Image 1: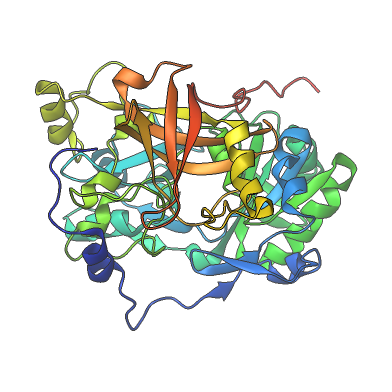
Image 2: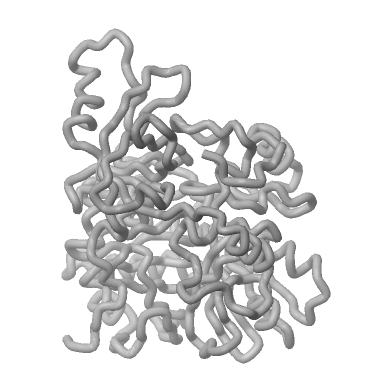
Length: 455
């Protein structure tokens, strides 16, 4: 699949240029709530989330994968980059860097999705930005490297402070989450609308409560000082026990994103910022797996915002933002946009893949990691034998009783019910053709904005 304007730099070269470890790389650290989490980490197994080690699972990944639908969970996202932006031109800078409008209306306490492009119109980074004051904002993302580099490269009357180590982020998501958060803060949180936030206190510690929806369900985030992380994690687990709360290990964390139809930076696409000379590194996850290998350069792993469901519904706005000219050029040249859809994998084909081990097949296909792989994997999607799309995020969803994935596919094949083939297995291995069916996203009902004012 040719994504256009292919960059001559190969993926392997980009890895070397952008991701070779150097002196000064941050060391691997335990999370600020590690002591509290250790009590529930009965397997004593850890996985790396950015620079932090977190428990892989607590009560088991199958139990944890359904918690956000059946009750609720508490998960640790403290590894996310956290940048405080202040100054007279802080809002103007954010408005230029992000493709979404933050200038017209951005209330104090409001939270907005901030999609950042490079000059070529590729997604360079994305996260959420919360307005803390008239000239103060907090940006959280898998990496804030692109924002840091862009601010420091310009002449903006604004400053940025990296507060990653100083703050924890806990997610409490699921239908019982309002009850848990209220028990935790000792007051109602029903006044916090979706994508809004306000301050509260937990055991005398000031925290910010945000209503978010990374799980596709009603949910909240708690942001607070790292020195109180152990105390607040323990208090949240205790407050949630009457409501069936589960502690969420990183083995289960990414599953909910696929169910909700949310593409994840560094897993479902690669950030275009990895090719920017002089920009800091992002997402050192190694070479992607999967059956798709680009022959056109690294941009085949990049995505336009419209290919991830982040395009403009009413056309490209007139206001200035980084990457706008490239999007306008695409529109003028009528370049075909690919579309983000979901894939339901054929159950018999998936069961046959797992059964190959018991069948004593001499040449075994690559195993499927459950519930999903922690590293990026890009698989070919074929229609009548021709490449039509790329599948990512292959996940076993216990909530749906199905194997699912995201897929960026040619618009001609995006209709729900379209039958496709996913090629399973990296080149050089025993590959299998897995039948799949196109479906709309999200895979399950979007309940993020459900009314919680009625008790």
